[in-house]
Length: 304
Image (cartoon, helix red, strand yellow):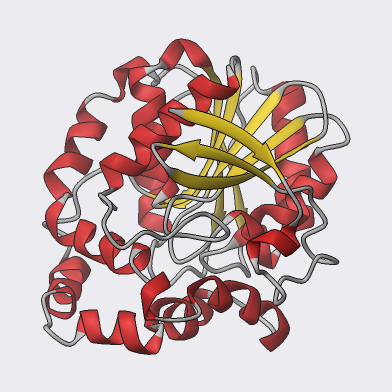
């Protein structure tokens, strides 16, 4: 059951939130008793932004401030992230996040969507696009993936870390993902302490840290599902794609971009040489400009 509610951020107990950086009216959808927060800015064709981990809609704020002049920009926070509820008992699987996104889109009656995905937002959002291709007109991917990494030598090393019994402790007690991992994925433009606070405070204590470790578990458990998405991509393979890639990403490297390009021929690529994993945070002006250009000329793919 859904219920749309609009309220002030003060009611959400977000005294830490920098509303100068994030100057958007709060909106919430009730999804089966859980509050999902989102922003809905501007008017025009719909651009739907889907974040990954350990992030939230805040990562898209600067891009949205530019694009809302011409488009309706919508950015939800997954359950367990940002300003959404963080229940202890909840299915935090990647597939469930995609199902929630589907229901969110249905409730808002969104059509002719330009989908923007990043990190885990890739499989979450692209799973929706694959199964509801008639609702999605264009797709923009920032540093993500859509296939199994089981045979990747770097993933094999990462698997040992993911299987460590210490990992849940690090995530729950030390807020390991936003405090330590996130800043280390940036390129030349580092995350300031002031902005880092906006990424750590949504996970202020252990009771609010259920979402990030579930995504870590997903890397262990969902590789076959990721590969299945790649094998089903034919429903979206001919849609206009834009890839915006931070080339200094230490996690999702340029090889991922090359595989995306090989699988989606109707695509253009914008490579940001000094960016790491978060181009929308590191170079939002370049990301917004690339999206604006793509939206006006997406029938003419270009590699750059």
